[in-house]
Amino acid sequence: MAVQKSKKSPSRRNMKRSHDGLDNPALAVEPTTGEVHLRHHVSPTGFYKGKKVIQDKPE
Image 1 (cartoon, helix red, strand yellow):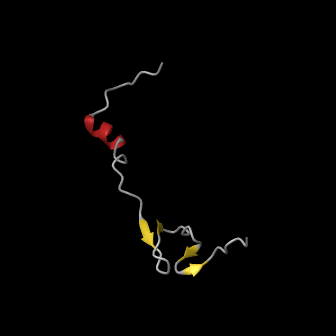
Image 2 (cartoon, rainbow, N blue to C red):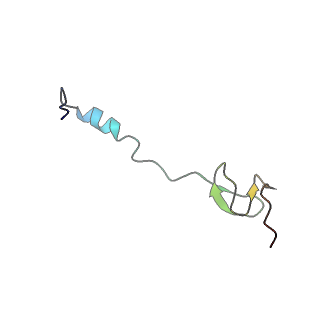
Image 3 (spheres, rainbow, N blue to C red):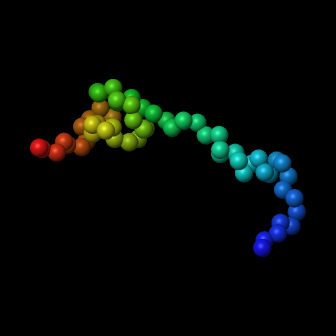
């Protein structure tokens, strides 16, 4: 079993937890459809930066 050589100080302990308090994901609004989606991702309807990049499947 591993045994630590010396006690970890409260400062070091809290540095390990520094990323636990992350903010909400960055969201963007599509200018053409008004949909909310993750930044740098294609919206659910296939638009990216106001242009249609994914064509709908023909039924």
